[in-house]
Image (cartoon, rainbow, N blue to C red; front, side, top):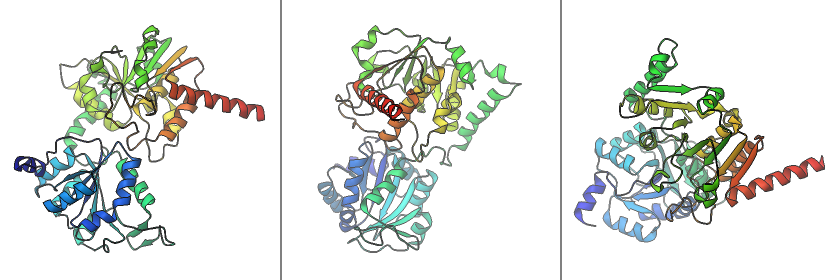
Length: 429
């Protein structure tokens, strides 16, 4: 690597920002080698996340790059608060794992992880050496883990140390990767306070009419239905390849629902009436649609971004959880619904005479994850799960009473199987 490239990485500026990153930090090859099975399990299970390996010594990094070609290998960030923050944010680190023995993170690094609410663990595996009781690390870690082969004492806790199998460790790391860090982070309090204040004004009887010129929040499904003109037919487009099925050009509809804005550059079905998102880039990229959000944090962010800038149209939005009880009642556990699931839940709650669904391919379409995209892994990102999502969607669609048309073989075949099974259950009764 050229010296300039090394400096850029040390300053916290790696070339590509991944979707979510599991960061393993160690100082011996044995520590990483002992984690090989866990690294492989995480890579196979969560293909939309990245595993990043860091070590201080160039020779060790070179050896790690040869041993783990599927992982990215970088030096740890320079020991300064500014560069630590840059590194963690540009690498999108969600979980930091310090490999024992000889894992001695600095106070600066541990403080940076804490301020960004990044899960921090100390891990050892058989053959790497025992866990140590470094004072700073012990205070910062959520868990101390020993990864071992299947033995009678797997799952047993010894003080703070948990003994887990490789698969149990992969499950735990996956749960931590799936965390929504935004509500947890104790940063940008003033900025979040601005959004919260704007929402409070929009909800106050005295100020609602004044703020409605810039910020309009719909709180009931009846309000949303009236705003949309009581649509008779709704077209819901996810972002899967079937969202560009040629047959859609023949469809007529009164309202178009979409997810995020990756479709914008492709120029098809851009006259969106409602867009479901939580991302800042979409909030800035689209001005005309009504926004469907999922969390209070997203509402505050949206209010701040859209209300204070005169270049945007008036901001109109709703919380999808206010529109339908289906989202609130479903047992998501540690998972959360995708924006596509929220989109369909709101569309079903509106009960149009006709509902057309396309682009909801459950990351199983033969052409990949998105139209024209041959790079993005055809898999759900951490925080979502195909089986859980499918269960929600099938039960949701069973509550729709109009004419349902599903474009896309993946969801359509699952829906036909679900209906056939339901009919068989009724016959048995």
